[in-house]
Amino acid sequence: MFNYKNVNLDIIQGDITEIQADAIVNAANNTLLGGGGVDGAIHRKGGKIILEQCKKIGGCPTGEARITTAGNLPSKYVIHTVGPIYKDGNSGEEKFLYNSYYNSLRLVKEYNLKTVVFPSISTGAYKYPIEKAVKVVLKAIKDFIDIENSPEEIIFVLFNENDYLLYKNYFKSELNN
Ligand code: AR6
Image 1 (cartoon, rainbow, N blue to C red):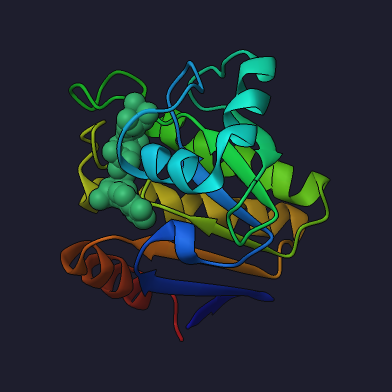
Image 2: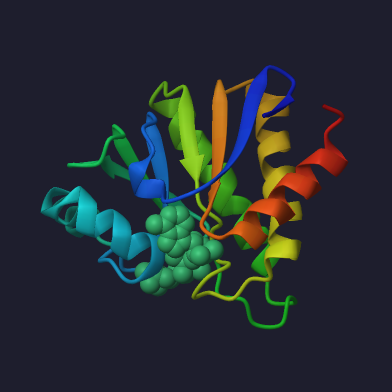
């Protein structure tokens, strides 16, 4: 467990659909109509109410975020954000990824939520190199905490052991605790 200012930062290895929190974040696509990876798992386990709400929302631009119920999942809400597809690193990917985390946290605050769980957005099907992504992630959440002093806890869930260890090592090297 790490912390930055008053916010607890946890890094765990596992399946995001099994975690109980106020909100889990979905690595969605612009249609918000589902897909593979985290998105597939969330819609499968959450049930069709999530898809129904996503249809009403009608899509989401890259870097933005939208919120729905979590249906049958143990959390209360799903925040759907769309990370960038990684091309060459010079196509605005960093800013889009930063915005995905930052705008998700804005919704967490707007809904008065205390705990939120993030997967590693864009580092699967969207091919963002995770060693680059983790730097953007920590920058975005620190900037948000600096300004908003919220939420109480942010959990990062990594699916495989290499990603988990990479996150842990990076957070350890950047945060003095
Ligand atoms: N729990 C936690 N992490 C997971 C899970 C899970 N159940 N399943 C996969 N991961 P991805 P993206 C990890 O591809 O790169 C979808 O089709 C995975 O190992 O889910 O943002 C959408 O509809 C990887 O490290 O998201 C979009 O079209 C990370 O989650 C597209 O994929 C993200 O992988 C979005 O691609």
